[in-house]
Length: 338
Image (tube, rainbow, N blue to C red; front, side):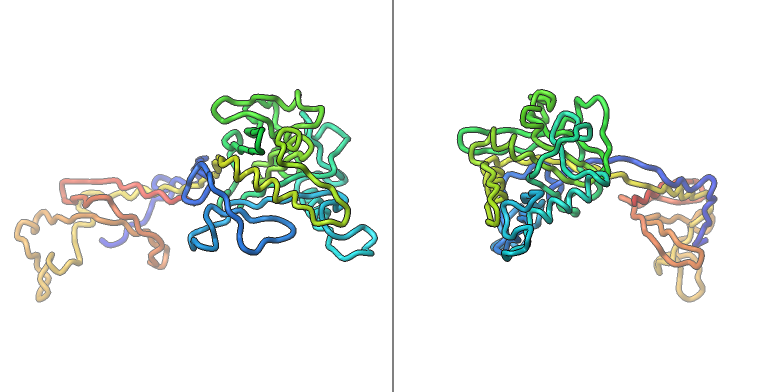
């Protein structure tokens, strides 16, 4: 027998869902300690690599960072279009607002309750994880960013470990960015930072971290946000330099795996013949081993899954050959993850 049809009720278990986490950076690494930019940079944002793309062909983009302002400050151009420039920071603010906030919500709010206050903030820094790195979502409570600015250094995490409830907005779940560490937890809660607002907002389902420039620049001296009109300020460059000096960005990703298990049942007296030319003679098809006449033996090395027209769809290979004879039976579980 070459093929055996599955009993769908008993042999196939579908839609098994498992949540798995792994290191977010290239190669499944949890910690990124070196940061590089490319030779060509956009005026809108900066792509950050794990290695120098100018000299290392394996370098990959890990995340992007930039600065956004609701009125376009920190970039060229003005609202009346009397000067040249695209007002990139304003375009970025609108883009993130449309992506993350509910309709008719004009500004982001960095407080203990992101969706509760009517007051807003005019600008923010953003870090957006590369989709290939993040895959499905960032794992809340499992990222930590160090910012170093000469005399001061802060460690930032989210407050998912202490949040009594989860706020859900258009961009999915949202948590405050607070000072602390993965090991020791929240150091300063967002509620005690309301004088300048929390350090930022974290959207794990979108892979986006927004940082509050007013709060960050108050703690890190080298990050001094400049809000010039019709001027190409280097706000994103200051943030990048602070990340480089901090030399520690830990993150893990989270994804849901959907699995289907196939139980391949090898009953006795089934699959006991081989197409290997050493199994039988080519002249009359008789068994080459006399002992195989009443008890032919084979070794199962792989299992193929076929569709209704006998087209091979998948192959499962065993770690070691499995002896099959009239006196033996086996069940081989083949699991496919999607």
